[in-house]
View (cartoon, rainbow, N blue to C red):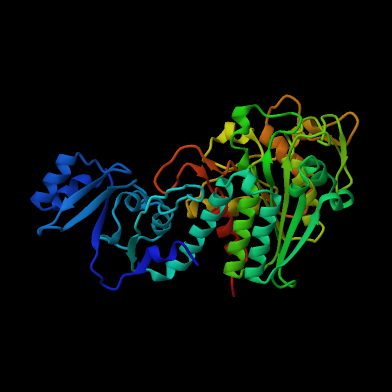
Length: 462
């Protein structure tokens, strides 16, 4: 059952309070249109029309009021999020038009992660009326997918390990009549040796595994979605310092994105043969832990010298991407909280996107702009491929010196993808360090809606 669909309802003339959206550029003309009493309230409150600014306007009779909220000059998805957060429970309608895309922001302003709170705040629903009821169902699905990513990333690692990631995928498979296959523990050694090596130090109850889900007509184009599922990352023997380890429950953010995108694909019944692959591990420290200097043989057969055990995500993705490529996919997408270098380059809001085909990159960038889900294309710069050279193996897992870290990580992954197969890689932070309306501090979906929009255009329904 959707947590969000009821928050938008068809406008059938119900009694509701009005919401006005006012930009700085339109403030003066809007003020002139107001009755004197309302204009006085606006001036007394020093309302400027800046995003997030709001004022309550008195009506003509006792108990009557409406609200005005500042908004950016260009309409956006988050225009109504501040309103949904600030207003009391009740029924509302926009004075000008329908919410459109901003209905999603209205829904997500109701998101709370309160699973571990002993006392939860009771906040009533703010319901917005819309004259475009056909948008409600899809916006609710997008809100649910975003909330799924947030929930999984926010969950402590003790409560969301490899087994729990597996259970979430198995439940999704049951909901959509999909098939799940699990390769677990020592069974990984021959087929997926890098996944096994990264997760071998974890407790048996948190054994590494590759989780695969397949859904859809086998005659349709094959779509592979891969997500990095490191349930917790200590850094291994190259142990992280406390500050860097603090949020490593989020290192399965790539898996959360992949699972949420797979769910959107199945809900929309896109004409694809979906193949979801999630390598789920805990990068723990024990006598059996992977060591710097070890050499691993990958599923593809190439050998990898370990320079840094904290560059483990690309190892498990390498085996999963190799498996995905064996089934002649039409497209591969992968999501990973892969490098700090991407955050240094782009900050927390922009996921780094890499693509090996120009039309795929262009499609993602266009979809990103159209649905207000920003991403930034980074280069697969061939000259940096030499940074992955090893003296005694086919490659190293971490380029020496740390320069262009997100680029060399993407180049590492590219070696496991068939050259002719369109492939895009998202290096996503999956975390919002500060809160804003509709976007609380904590786990966040980044690039999810852009990817889904691209897929809808690439695989249109008949």
